[in-house]
Image (cartoon, one colour):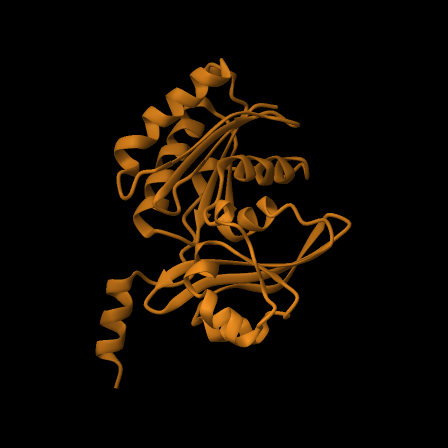
Length: 230
């Protein structure tokens, strides 16, 4: 089954074409806030590199968040449009499990962290046993100290947030393992793998219902809420 997947949750844009066993083509480029200008062209490039026609794509995957509010809206809208036009399923995939998958852990704990701004991170903790993932700390937007209080000291900390708050992590856990920078941002190949795993369950997916997962209001919304608090 051919899957076209995209991640627009950060300043790094990633698009991939995969089948059930291989990544046929994938790109991973820094684009800042230019997702709307770059996404469709990048999709066309990846399709060309994989020598696949858009009509051959049997399903779509897209990261739904948490992450950049604008980037998520652009990615979800674009992939939803392609899926609806082609009458194909679209699977919305949370970004933190995508990061965890990319760590390629067979047994152990992983804590993916992304910068949520406002001195917070998006974080969660997953346990892997014989390659099977289980969520042990749910996704949340909290100060780094809060997620560290919930994270086992032997977890592997990955993601851009792990490097941004490396000092705080090592202050709490001096021997903490922090992943390489190539795990800082979600990759579309992992989005596709998550989408394929969901499709394998036999559940029917309606592209029209896919929506961004923000975990909290935008920075402006949070500021207004703070100003209006008694």
